[in-house]
Image (cartoon, rainbow, N blue to C red; front, side, top):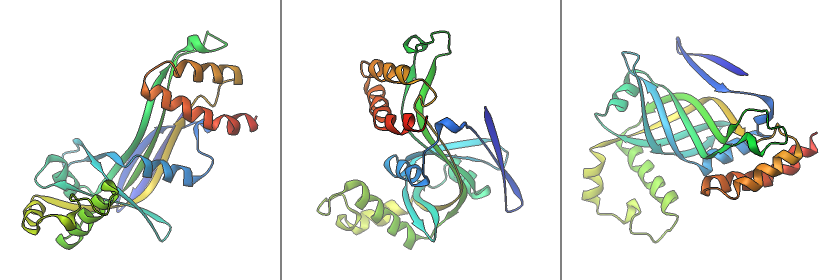
Length: 228
């Protein structure tokens, strides 16, 4: 089952589509926001003036203000994606975490398709570029958040001012006001209890991503089966 949403923004149409079934949803919106904050390295997608898709990868700050969500980050100037965002401010931020293959051989009913477990959030919104003062503020907040050490020499306020000023000439800050949020937290919630725990056991024998998904499934097991 797939649902397509259509949102009208500033006289243009922004189309998004995401795998969307009731099983694979968070119980509360705050869980979705927490996931976004835990996975701040996003894929940022847009379309240029010739309708050519563009994308880049950036770490973002996530702020909640006046019951709205805003993303802040920076990109290099004169890049294909930067130019595209200047012509078309409608963008899609994709947040993603660990993911893993799930074999139907682990199911009680083996005559069922294999699948993939994952978590992802698609946040659509309007991007605006900011001035140099805001750029310095964003750089300061980014280093503070990701260094997570008030004594780190890598903090902007600890760097040589001439170096920071030179670096700022090559980049531009932006903010995205989020206008739509879609998510999929697909963790085998539609399987019977025995199959669910079989999957956890097999995932614990796989790679690091699979083990992480297994841990998420363990945490979620009580919620899944209390609702049935």
